[in-house]
Image: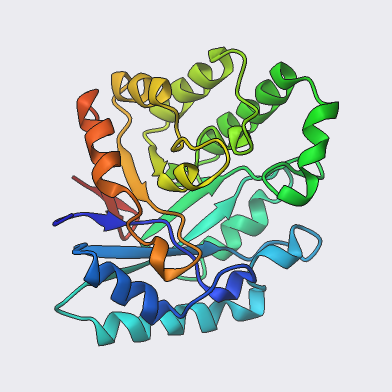
Length: 260
């Protein structure tokens, strides 16, 4: 895995991850990665998703923790600092303010909610049975398009996340339309290997969407979405093989700039 970066991983500050940032960095070093970029769940307004992300007053602590790891691993591992931000209509100004609080390396834009429903939360998986899957995906990808057009993010996180529990998109039309928006905005896609650890047993995006993205010139940023150190770099060799087989490109970000 020489030369590869894991650019999607979390810390206990989000309230649902285990292990210290130092342990994640050591796991990356042990796995032979060149570097990693922490992208913990960014603060949002207090009414939004409060149990699953750091609070605004914890942001300086997050920055300080990662800076300490950067210093300790200097010369051995390239440690970068980013955020996984949420796109939720009405919160864009708040997100913009948080993004202006620090010089981040990389910002993932993810959609985790359809209205008030956290569709990737196993506590609320029964809601899928009450939904029309076609409409669900159309609504979801409309939000992904909004994220792509917002100008806030560097990449789109786990593109086809609603499939997490096995509820697959009955049509790729909305997804392909969203990919057009991602390409037009010049964004990358988070190739998220966590999907291989979920009930759907498939990385995000699905192979057909990986091919469609590559055809549109959309690059990929590798991410394990690790919530514990042993998940760092999960199946990256498989991920790179899948991307390269369809002519795709793997990139990283530093200082919000893309590097091949």
